[in-house]
Figure (spheres, rainbow, N blue to C red):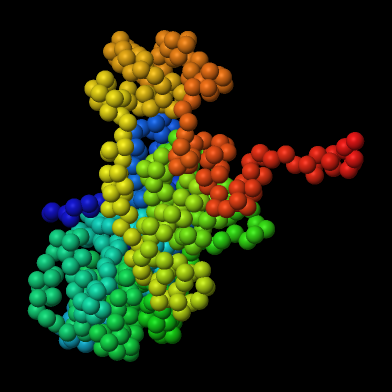
Length: 559
């Protein structure tokens, strides 16, 4: 027997729950996770190496871009979603026990409906359906689809029960069609089954142009034939009342999915699909099932609340650590965090993409740090398509939010490549790379020593000679060799505290002040939008003498 690709063979574990005991479809699933193990299983850790900060600009663009798909921090909402999915999946299998024959009863009833073309037909009475449904609602970019995919990935999709010669399909995820019709939605079900199991249901049912009722009856039969544990319908806002034959027909469709197919259904969409969800929630108790989950953007901390102790603070703190910039601040400032929230309104996809593009813009412009002004500039230039949605979220008006809730987040991958291309003509590495014959370790060491102040015509031959004489040494071991060989006169030039080095330091034009160190007053001036802002920045830096405080220290009488 040839099993579908990715199939695992059933290994049974006692769940410790009487209602689940003796049900192979449940006992073959992974064990129930506690919260610490679940957080660890859902987390996506990105390796951060400090030395990568000194890679050339184009290489760093690729390193930074891994945050777009690789960064994931489980929040309380993700834990709650996983637990609800876990409960829904297992409860749906209670009434379809492979060992007791309950599943065969459902299959026989499904066959009867297909043959008679009647959704109410049955061969065996008193068949318990334990299936439930629930809805997940959130605006575009809130992480609904990516979170679902990550949680579902903790389950094997196909399990083969050798003892029963049965193949179990644990979950099936389909997208609503853009034409908004129920018939096309049914067709997507058969296509996805074929893609996972290698069957030919599309040829058998889709190409014969059956009506919606016949297709639903067939879906019920196939879903039970393969013991589909969970049916996830994404982008539910695409469903059209007009193209689906009216609100009542659409409502009956969802009720039938749960009651007749006996398969748990999770419906996912934006607030634009509120009318669809509300119809479902007003229907029978079983259809409403476990209710609805509303994912709002991450909440902004109250003014008197410690931001670092909130979900927003924890999320941004962890993300802030993933900076590959030579002048990055180790701690995120309150001003940056406030601007970051204002421009993203807590939508996690926007939060991450704004952070990625800000880093790349910092490399391209030479500023090598993230500032509020830089973030605002990136938002204005790169995120124009979602400005209406951000404004709607700022307003707090539910009607406006629903109107703009499914705007498309800009294609950041394409923009990353375009910004990366700008680095090519600006690379000073032509002289730095050639002596090293493309050796990435040598190039990285050159950039690191240059950033530390060891910059002269002697640096290239020293690095090239050190790698040639010691090809097996690691970079950390080569660095002291090169520094020790560096001439004393040149070391004096490279020493930041050296008066001579300061005297020989070339003048920096005002247009390049934004590339200076963060505590350089010229950099502080370049970031100030007005004279008053510059004064406040100087006070914040502690660069101004506080006369009032000095006088107060003498009891108000310095004389």
